[in-house]
Length: 171
Image 1 (tube, rainbow, N blue to C red):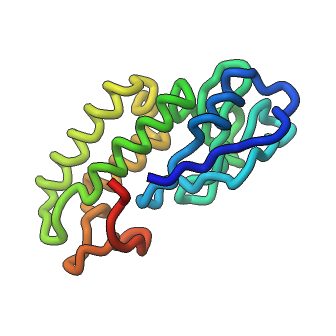
Image 2 (spheres, rainbow, N blue to C red):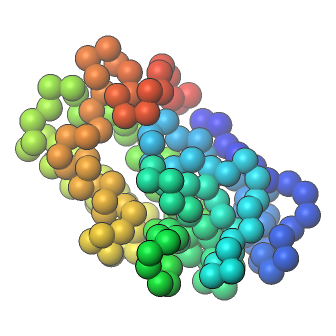
């Protein structure tokens, strides 16, 4: 698994622990289309006291809040943060756990199989961080809804039908 790590000067206001984590461990480049990390630290907007980490599959910014340490989704039409995970570590672990399990079912899956896969992934996410699925319309809940309707099967050729990612996920 490849990780994006940051370096250089710590952004103003960023807690030392968050910056150290981003420089030392970083963020995974997952094969799934659920997150694309920023190549370097990007300051949040005027409404965000944090660092933009990357974008969701809907091209919405995810950022880590300086005060709370929460990883949040910045929906432009909403006021206030939509919490994705309660920490950078929980976000990273959630991404890795989802990525290592892909494909979640074969191309010839049925809806029962897809629903069972989504429920298993939900249990994993809750074990990592109970905040992850607390919002029924949140980041991880929306992802699980897509898994439950069969959107995350490998195609018959073994390629990732969702992202175009081909081959081994470096595991």
